[in-house]
Image 1 (tube, rainbow, N blue to C red):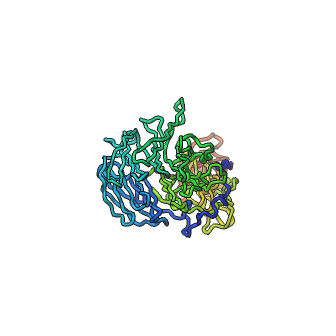
Image 2: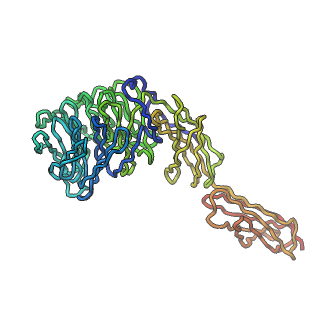
Length: 577
């Protein structure tokens, strides 16, 4: 057995004065288990396509693309800033991109053949029919114009690499001109300050070296400014775009690149900024990025497992070394990772809205996060113990450890999460409550022989950081068995003898009653007698007529099985005539 402690992936000091005095406060609603949020809502969707935040009316819109067949209906779930669902908007066609106009009075919604225009006060709509989209649109409102992509493929399996057009709708004159910009893949749009707009190309089979480009939208006609492809001469380093965002002043562009992490670029020429952000924690793949409207913070979403953070909230200035707030999502109450394009801020920067998804990508959650002024460290003691000392397959095992935390005592008891890894894979053991003295006990019943490695995680909550995982390896052996015999001290050949016994097996119940081998050894040699089957209560009886006088030894044995050890017992009887 041994205990191991993984190195800390990211500094875990508190985010102190940098977040003080900014309006970021702890909400009254309790944080959900292992979540980073003030509130968590399970979304009524099975496929996520877009989110839009209306800070004027304090509403959050989340769209379910529901692609697949022509008749699939679409859905928009509407939530308050407190995480309460206000209404659900259903349509007869799939819904993809969302965009709000400058004053938040109109929500533009991408459909298969239409751009719907919803009044954000009444949720009444009217549609503008546009070119057919079969793969899901991206929308952005910039320079008084709604820009939207139009990907078309005969089969949905071709959507990732199909030819996509960039189209527009001008509300002032109710026209819908085509911009004549186009390329392959499900192109993504993002509006920014100063009538700027980003167009990004996801990696696909038609684009081995995807691009990112900045447009000027101020004149009613798109003017392309900076553009960049990222692969080097050897084809390495190509962009794997998941999300993109302008800084609040428009001078920088942050890109969530699944291959490279969070890229920080200069808007003027898309060159790398002089100082970039620290790498995401080991094992975390970038999936989302968003700057707060006040320009102070950046949220960096990721896909990660266990206690590895899925979300970092930190100063937008990369030169500011203040440690980020770290949030880990794991499990059926919170999702497992931040969805691509799954982070947006309210305009004043007081709330961060984050969409998470499970590993399969068919369930989604909305987290309404009001980051606290500080987040405290939690430590899992690297020394774990277990009992019993010899772990046995099929019997209870306890793994004990200790947790320490900084800051005030939590309102609710902290909980740790545990898994067991053995030859059959990783097994989720659930959560276990930490006692007031910091101790916790993980309960399990291993069922395979060999090494079982227990990993204990603390995933964090609103005011506590995730802790570095600790592991403990236990050698699981076969369960012991025993045979007890009761035999007479003396017997005769004429009357024979009877030996009774009891067979006991610990651990997992035997699939069938044990069959015991019986051997007799006397002065004429050793021979095997008829086997005996143990009764349901563990007892058995051996009857024999000895073949010769003097000492005769009876040996009873069981060979064991995959989970139980062998056992043997002997009894010696003096035989007379």
